[in-house]
Length: 214
Ligand code: AMP
Image 1 (cartoon, helix red, strand yellow):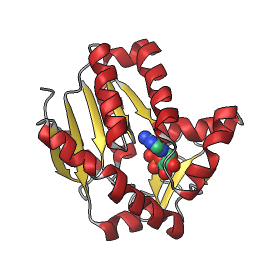
Image 2 (cartoon, helix red, strand yellow):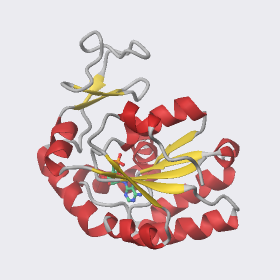
Image 3 (cartoon, rainbow, N blue to C red):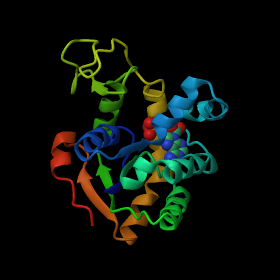
Image 4 (spheres, rainbow, N blue to C red):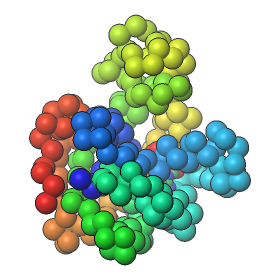
C-alpha cells in the first residue's frame, strides 16, 4: 500500500499514519519528523531549515524534494509500502513526487484528503503533546495518556509541546496551507487519485474505513 495523507496542520495525519503503520507494517515518512530530527541533531541541514520550521513557513522545495528522493530511493522497507505524511505540500513537490515514483515504478494508490474544520484544528494543535522519547502523540483533552505526564507506550516522562504549536505560528501555518497546499487537492482530483474523508472523525474510525488500495 502506498498512500499520501493530505490535510491542514492538525487534521490528524500523524496519528492516522501511526495507526496504519502498526496495522499494515509499512513505513511512515513524515517530512516534519525528519526535519525536527535534523534540527535536534544539529546537522547542517537542521540549521538550514530551522528558521522555516520555527515560523511555520515552508522549507524550500529543492531541499525537501532531495530528502524524499533519498528516502524513497534507498530505503528498502519503503519500497514495500509507505504512508507519506506532510509531503507533498506544494504543486511543484507533487509533480516532482509523481515523476520520481514513476521512475521508481512505485505509483501511489491514492491521496487521502483529511478535510477538517478550522476551529477543530486550532483546538487540536494547541492541546497537542508529543513524547520526546518515542514520538507518540497525545492531546491534553482528547487523548491524554493514562497516567498524567507519562507516555503509555514507552513510559517516557517528557511529553512536550512543539515549538510551532503556538497560536501565532499556527495561524501562519494555516495561511501557508491555504495558499500553497490546498491547490494540491484539485491537482489530485483531476488525476482521479483523491479520496476525501472527514478529518474530524477519530483516527481509529478512519483507519477502519480506509479505502482499499486501487
Ligand atoms: P509538520 O510536522 O508536517 O506539521 O511540519 C512541520 C514544519 O516542517 C512545517 O511547518 C514546515 O516548516 C516544515 N515542512 C514539513 N514538511 C514540509 C514540506 N513537504 N515542504 C516544506 N516544508 C515542510
